[in-house]
Amino acid sequence: MHVRPLFAALALAASCPFAVFAHGAAPARGHDAPPPVVTEVMSRALPDYPGKQALMLAVEYPPGGADPVHRHDAHAFVYVIEGAIVMGVAGGKQVTLKAGESFYEGPGDIHTVGRNASRDKPAKFVVVLLKDAGKPALMPVP
Image 1 (spheres, rainbow, N blue to C red):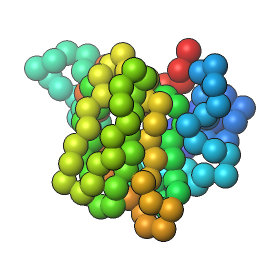
Image 2 (image 1 turned 180 degrees about the vertical axis):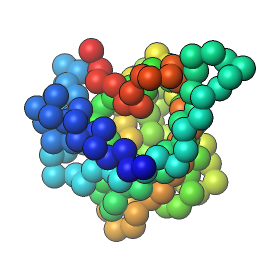
Image 3 (image 1 turned 60 degrees about the horizontal axis):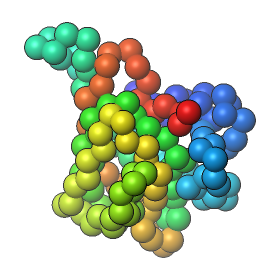
Image 4 (image 1 turned 45 degrees about the vertical axis):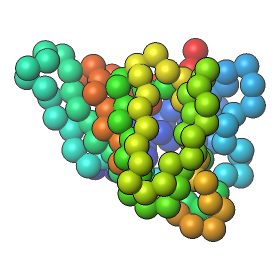
């Protein structure tokens, strides 16, 4: 299943291209930055944790690609497969991750930076979200 329509729907709700959510400042992704391609790999209810779900997504940032400011309201585990990405949450330092490296976001974190470190090469990563069943994968920042 391709989850890009989820992001597109949120974009319409936010009245900005590709769900650029305002947080009192300019978005992390410029209007000309290409959006990521997000594909659902699998989704599974967790019977040992009633009401919880694991969601695995494959994400590809095109060269120069970036995410909008957002949050997941979930535990998010990121693993870089190819290229390099820059990640950061509000109150934390930005980190550049290469293939084989990982990153964690907690349920209360606001994802302020998510972008390809390269303007010439794509970057690919997998993210596993442990979240409440029925909640969206990506949520606007209030």
